[in-house]
Image 1: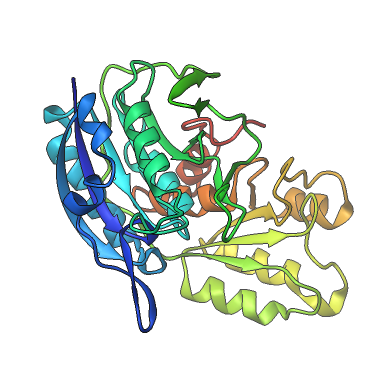
Image 2: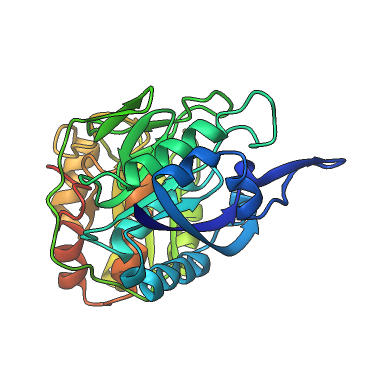
Length: 330
């Protein structure tokens, strides 16, 4: 039998009803007791890192989570992390950069309804996660949810309540699990050993472009942070009328060493700033990077990871355009 470490962070799967709404209260042994079949094919140890609503997730917890995996890596065949759904895609992306090329599976799962409810997706998601982690094909960071195995850098929560909460953006599902049977579509190559990173720079934020939003807000965000992701419309661009001042603001702050990345609000197909003047002129004259088909979750976490290692603009750009866990295919 495979030996797994189950790491708890809280979330809906661990929640109980209170007068103020659902709140994480169950520990991992109680959660496991609802799915006794897991013990038939896995030996499971547990570690409760925290027990929070995932709205409270932070880069500091990602660093602690990475350290927990590193400290226990040689003792287990894989890891299953119980997590809230709201920030699960961010955590999956962060771990994909903090522990790239892991030959052992790091599976993240959770639920839309608590495990103690009569109608819940918790039991199936938990069973599927251990089943996938125990397979001989699993490696790297994935989300297992609603019978889908999603690459950690490609996941996004696309439904707020229904059981099919997550989608894979601009990338196929790695596998599906139906009636306990694993159907593997994409086999990821297993590397010899993992690499662990220990620092993130949290001074990265996202600016969502909306009609009429003032460029002074972008300037303020660049003042307070080391990097800003501009989530633009369509294939990517900025308002170009003279009174908008976006071009001058971006040019000014990038000359001062700030990092700016252009991405799109559209979930599928990615950015292509060369298509329209509002994008091509900016990219040709200003040191700005383009996210292409990356998710905003992956861009944010990748920049935190990169800026945790270097401040050199050339190295930042090199690392950003380096494909890690199939996060960018352009």
